[in-house]
Image 1: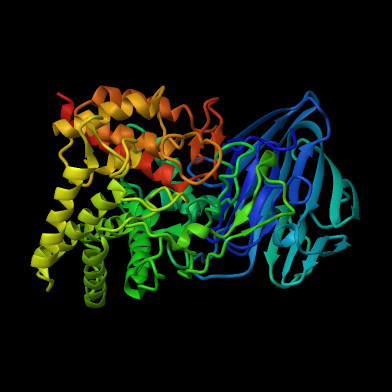
Image 2 (image 1 turned 180 degrees about the vertical axis):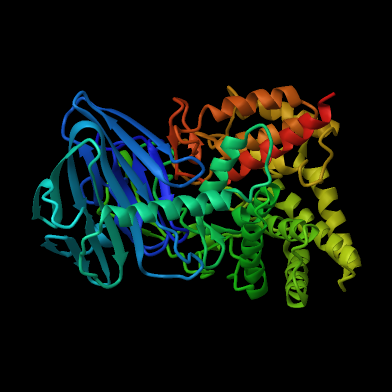
Length: 611
């Protein structure tokens, strides 16, 4: 009872960082000044030591609802009691998001809609993942929490001279208050995080109303650029807003999720930090964003990806790392927060990511596929970019036939993963296409020779005659849902008998009630203890593959069933447990990207089928 369900949260943000708000009105995850910065509120990972902002009715019998203001990232949490109805409106103003800043605001408007309602308010920051002490000063206009190199100022929202019915006290670095409101009355807080403390000031309701109006206008104007007019408009638009919320505007980078340490199994050790940008996620994002008409975001993300290709500052495993910080830095040293108990006791809590230096050959295919796709949509790179592509592919021609850790970042040793070989084929194929389509100089004979060698090897060694399927790696008979992308990349036709047989094998081993596992860890040890849930992105990829293979009716049913696993706001974490509970980091970009891709494929094929 000390922790809300992972799914019982909404996401707000300002395109440089974000916060999670639970359905009970608690902000239990907020990092500043960036997504990958230390937390200010982290109660989601330790309810005692993590820190929080809470606003909730003092009575016990409460009905709670939560929804987004239409077509925005403004979150409204409502509380209904016998005595009255109140609501809390949370948002982060978006002001020049492309300019990196240390100052970020989180606005909380508290109002009584009907009758009378008393709220208990607590502001309890815990800087640097709860490791740094802070000083607290209280004034008539708010409070200032100051730590070394970080601060949080709480500005009160009320009219000047208004004798609000509030009782306030401070102790142990926490400010507590009780606030009684009657119908029509509005109060609130403007929290301002920064490196240096700012004095608290009185903020009038008219000022926060202006902030609200400007934030609503920003999001509705942005969403208005969507070109999607298909069957699942509400879900895809919510996914688009969620992806935008997870974008670091100064560089265009997209974090895999805004959270760290949320478990893939309650009580287990599969607890990773996802507040970074994976080459793989960035590549897939280009397709999804262009598919919805968001060309500026696709261009920015493609620019971030091209910069990594140009820099080629990877480590000993190749010219690219599998992930980077949102500013492009490769420093992701992993450490454990020993003093935090983890979500519902799921330890260890890790920050940083030790998988950053793994060899994962598939990233080169995903990167080149997105570069090629962007070029088809008028977003071609320049001369220096092409030289970098050539250098990358020259490295790949010499290194594709190596054991690797694979797409799932296993820590159980390297293998000859089939998916890595398939995506190496994609990288060379897209390089050849770019060179021939745009008249670019390239060692085409060498690239073609290696591309064809990969194809022959996968068909010979990646295919398991006994299973009647393509398998995870060359020395196993285990299936792997990563291979669902084989037909979408053009490596194999979606109606090829080998591919149809592979889909049938996956249906028998990896699919349970339409939900799809990545693979079977028991049959293919990955170096970690415990189990995991079904992967939502794999389920959406399965939908896409089924639709392309001609099983359109089955694909649509699975897609519609999968939509029922979203939370009350249309958000998805990484995985779904057997109980239907969402687990893993939340919300996860890859899942929402896969949802968009599956919906676009279904829409296109259903339109073709229509009389």
